[in-house]
Length: 477
Image 1 (cartoon, rainbow, N blue to C red):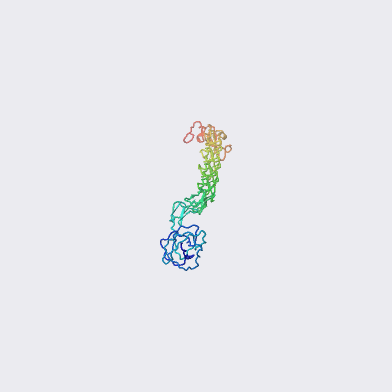
Image 2 (tube, rainbow, N blue to C red):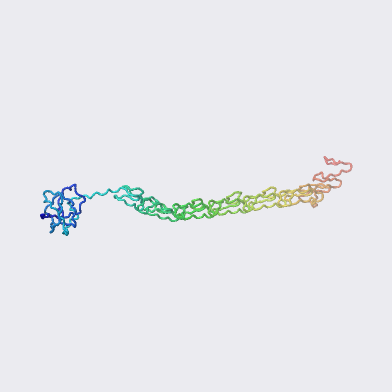
């Protein structure tokens, strides 16, 4: 028979002794607890070498040991090989536990502070790279947060990059940033795009919408404001959604803030890109004019365009309304003052010999003009005369009495008919006057009067018988 072994009292815990250094050859892994000899597992365990500490515990435990089980195991125990120092008792073989062993007292889950620490088995080396859209944090790959991205394999120390202005990363783990669509801007955290209203445009650097400046507009969300076309303007209004038409009398160039008024002498219709010059015969004496006015009759624009006033016609000229230039009066017509719409004809007894005359001239003595609008006067016929200027007709010499005559264009009847001579009129004569004291007188008896010009030759007295007339001395001998 196998002698009954004397059980070695096993402490329920490891005494708190200062251990020596841990031997290098310690089996791994270390079990979480050491079963006592009194434990009886349900199955016979495969013999496993137990780690034996390098120190010898004292026989006197600090606390009461676990009592020895009352029943020995029935199966033959396998011997536990171990290297026990010589001062230990003879190794006692372990016995297989009985099918119903007494429940063992659990060992402490935490080793005593004096128990030598045993290193955990080495783990796999940490990764130093991540996929696109990730970054490395404490040797762990993390997704890039919203608003950031990573477009390359992340090395240690490499972080995600904030999306550039105008782009966003709306989801975690982005490898690229998405551009905001037309008329939107990226939020400051680059997580989403916000839409701008009409009249504004996105400023991605400021992460906000800015008002379109004066002279520009946006009719709907757009990235850039549009310039107003020529003929349109916004005025000094900012954030305009459209451009307004330039009114008639105003104009504008492209990208104008406001419409400009047309200058004097110019005009424009609505939405004009420039002002037109007033045509000849028209004028505009005010600014912002939408049409030019016609010059009144008697005035003109002197043949020029772009006039802002009309000039009156000079004397000798005239014009109808809307005249570019004034017209010169024809001969026989005049305008004596400026600004007349028509010429006046010269009346009877007067004439205007030249075009553009400003006055009519009286016909001189010996001439007459019985009609109006004439450019010359007529000579009086022979036997007639006009003694003053401006005569509309000539006077017959016969009205002076018998014996009077004249040549063509005479201003007086200074010819006496044959049988008359020129002499002093008697005061009783009907032709006698203060200014007319001489005239044709009947040739006296015993004289010869041949007539003609009023000189002494008109009267030649006849000599008596036996006498003759000396022409040089006029003495009758």
